[in-house]
Amino acid sequence: MSGGVIGVLALQGAVREHLRMLDACGARGRAVKRPSELLDCEGLIIPGGESTAIGLLIMRGGFLEALRETAVKGLPIFGTCAGLIMLARRVTEGSQPLLGLMDMTVRRNAYGRQVDSFEADLRVRGIEDEERPFRAVFIRAPWIEEMGEGVEPLCFHQGRAVLARQGHLLAGAFHPELTDDRRIHRYFLRMVEERKNEA
Amino acid sequence: MEEKGTLRIKTGLAEMLKGGVIMDVTNAEQARIAEKAGAVAVMALERVPADIRAAGGVARMADPTVIEEIMAAVSIPVMAKARIGHFVEAQILEALGVDYIDESEVLTPADESFHIDKWRFTVPFVCGAINLGEALRRIGEGAAMIRTKGEAGTGNVVEAVRHMRTINEEIRRLTVTPREELMTAAKQMGAPYDLVVWVAENGRLPVVNFSAGGIATPADAAMMMQLGADGVFVGSGIFKSADPAARARAIVEATTHYDDPQILAEVSRGLGEPMRGQEISQIGRENLIQFRGW
Image (cartoon, rainbow over all chains, first blue to last red; front, side, top):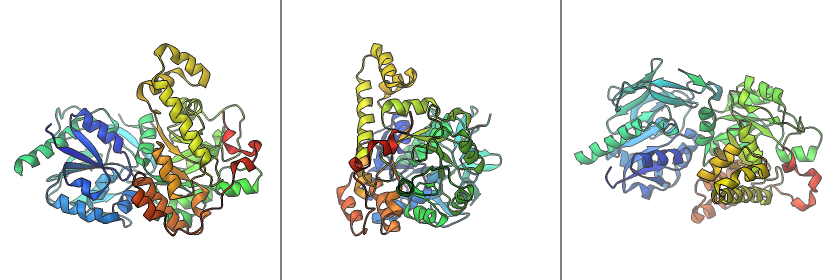
């Protein structure tokens, strides 16, 4: 990977795991806490955490607007779990601040409570060696309830889309950063490279 | 193959709570205030620690009705406390569907020799510790998250600081201890050898470590984060203060921006009276909660 920095939104949640994963992929990761730190990022990961907490913290100091603006300009973003919720345009229940960038509706805590959290082997389209299953870790996870035409599902669990892409945006309901399987992070890093070549 | 209740799923939820604030609540209304303020989870209790301390008597698991009302009121994870060693209270909490069980010294211990065998449960556990040996014993029993104990219900951060510094110092020491000395170190701390080796190699606990027991202000929370906590529990500090909603919000922001004094100054302003607090030396060692558990 070339010299650019991949930001990991560090307001709350599993920041350390994504930084570890980026490091393992040979990319440079950096925790991002302020809007100004977005400026020299070539890509951004929104980690898992509590989406209500991240949603509130993102309202401070114009962060929400700054993120939306950078995303609209084409910054590649990968959201996991709470990050997937933040990227969505709609949630099925309740109201919370969302970036609203991907044309999809998500259901929070779709599988139930923590005792219903699970891991499973799933096929993920588009990653290297895609016939080899990916160990997907779902923790109080959301799923994608509905999506618009521009959103391409890359992975399903029992008929529900749990990983999807819309242009330069990627969103997953499970946690590749809690495993040692780097394929989804490498897929995202390829999206970042593609974007750089376009620009 | 699909699996539930794996160690990765248990520790994983704690990883998702990092950088956040877990707040003690005693009813649905308080839970909603906590969620709105940005809490990452709530701890469902019948009484906050300050009131448990004042009331005396035996403190037990909360009434399932209270816990269920709180679970219905919010979408964030709900934790609840079981007495040390009281595995049936834990079974009941798991049956209710709580997201995390705190095997807690704040309640009156039910067993003076043994903690709960936490490996037998699908639901994850958090346990308190005042030093590294205690933390590793709890992890050895299956705890998926640790919190330093501090001294609950006092609004005095001094014990929380002591416990966090103690654990950090013991970890640092292990990282420079020669391999052949690790078995003796494990014997001295009363901790499982393989976990001692893991800590020596990695320089941290194998699970998330929050700070608890005495945090009452945004500055307290930020201090614990700067000392290396992964997040904070606030018990009596919020709902025993003059303006719980404002204080809760301020502590959440201080926990995220713990290394930015400008933001800390801003969020610390105009929060009204904090909880009154207690000097530890006036409590008397026999009444200190932190020495419960073994």
